[in-house]
Amino acid sequence: MEDPVFTFGIIADIQYADMDDGYNYTKTRVRYYRNSLSLLQGAVREWASESVTPQFILQLGDLIDGFNVSHKSSEASLKKVLTEIEKLKTPVHHIWGNHEFYNFSRKQLMESRLNSSRVQATLTTVPEDGGDPLDSFYAYHFSPSSKFRLLLIDSYDFSVIGRDPSSDKHIKSSKLLRQKNPNEDKNSPKVLDLVETRFVQFNGGISAAQLSWIKAVLETSDKNKEKVLVAGHLPVHPSSTDPICLTWNYQEVLDLLQSHPCVVAYLSGHDHDGGYHQDECGIHHLTFNGIIETPPESQAFGTMSVYQDKMVLKGRGLVPDRTLLYRKKQRMAGKSCRQSAGKMEK
Ligand SMILES: Nc1ncnc2c1ncn2[C@@H]1O[C@H](COP(=O)(O)OP(=O)(O)O)[C@@H](O)[C@H]1O
Image 1 (cartoon, helix red, strand yellow):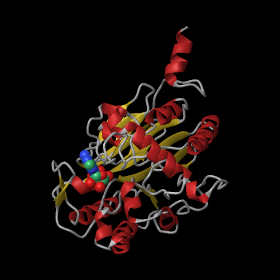
Image 2 (cartoon, helix red, strand yellow):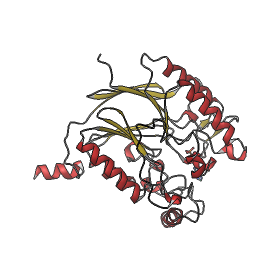
Image 3 (tube, protein in one colour):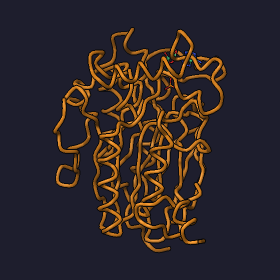
């Protein structure tokens, strides 16, 4: 078989805390807080022994658990986990999930090793910082190889968690939650139906400013005939996840991704059960199983090999192997594939 253009490792929802096993909120799944570090160590060992060391690791968010706050162990746990993942001596690209915001403020995150926007400094491009720093989002893109691009987006840009209560985004997010979720506890999805269950406090959305920045990146990639893999903590397709884990404005994000032929995949975490769906435009939506709910005797990570004509995911444990062909359907730039299909049929 030909050599891949590049390979990278993927891991999600490690949620480490130095505490005994517990349960998820509904008590349906065990959470292996302490053992998550051992599974990470196992993943690092396997990545190190691959015939080609991954060019980088994509960490899809929730690196340490929110319980670290009450244990006053956020800094210590973060250091422990980063020490393990950095043993690989390959760049790690970090997405921020809800548990990052339980443990740290945005300012702290920006100044921490979890801000990987400069990890491959000569490669990465961050948005121009024009607006109010209280409202800035954490997103960037880089090209791991000619004609390929990774675009990391901020699923908690529009959210109450991680936003200063005086900020415009916090105020508008609280208002949205009040409108959409009648429960006093806004983390509860009680009485909400199907995709409406996403309007819970532990989720968030993408602001108009971020959407327009993403659009500009994708337009350039379309023009340059690149293939783009987009990654965020929260899934954006209802068929790739339990709907309670969806991005608040998933449809807007989906419309945007689907209207750019360069987009080949969307990678996310958050739903610890994982998921997969190839959408009507051929975009592969991969939701990675969470390490935190993976039994000690199993595993949950992957190595993605990217070729000119496909991506091949080598999964471990709960993450299945997949061969992901790029879509054949050519879409008209600026139109969703459904719109362009409609147009072409006329
Ligand atoms: N069904 C629910 N009802 C009320 N609160 C919930 C519910 N599910 C989760 N929560 C709360 O929301 C927060 C995030 O949930 P958690 O399960 O830790 O998120 P994650 O899936 O990212 O690990 C926690 O404070 C948790 O107690």
